[in-house]
Length: 384
Image (cartoon, rainbow, N blue to C red; front, side, top):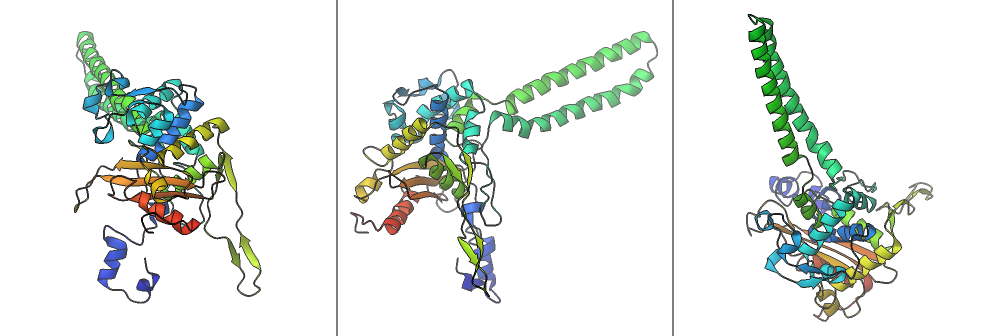
């Protein structure tokens, strides 16, 4: 966005460009845009499973559909993205290859051990909570959980139930009052009770289908789909928290403000720890190693090591289904990418989303590569 375009009168074409068109260039997407994270959420699932002791880093899961159990998996669409089959994968290889089935299994296990842990840990890392950044208009995003789903959808069905019951009451009250005799009244009461019972049956089924947390909710949640929605700033801060040892800081843009007359410091921002996560240092270190595996060997972001010989750090690619289709390309996935560098004593955390960008490594990952080259002065083997 060029601020000079907004000085004085602006043309309709320019107004459309910044405020109306799909690009909406005036929006600060870093803090106002909320996006499904896709596979970059898998570190939360990994930390939850390890923290709950429902797996170990070395446990291997067979990356085949049958690992998901009795759920009608094929009908629910729970297969590897792109139809891949990775065979036996442990945590490190699952992160490197981005195995959906591995993390769906871990999401189910974590839910069975403690239904709220994944949502709780997501919140501790700043996902789905206000960052308190010193900019206006930030979106909160959403880290779903069984409690959230019940609180969000439950009241709708309670109101519908109460409305149905109130209708039955208003329908039968005058009829019962005007009943000719006890037998007629008893017959009406039985009919009323039957309708009330049917409302109860309907309500129980509606809650089961639409309010209760399902196994497929755990599967979707574990791979960053379903109800998950976060801002790029939240994703960057999540990665920073993971690799700095678990301290969740408030991000800020302004370092300091100077009094224009005296030149004295009127405001000075200082690093502020909002919370320290409950995840153990060993678990943080394990997941950090998994992110490093993503950038080498068979990892989905191995280009980071191949293109940048000086690179050390970690990353995670994401291909997030968004429920809409780009009118030009027909694409239905956003490209999402998070990364940090260097591995020891990290200095920078990156998060990027390319709308309708498909695989995060091919789109947002290239932006991360360019950002690291600029920040560290690294040279690319591709001539950059």
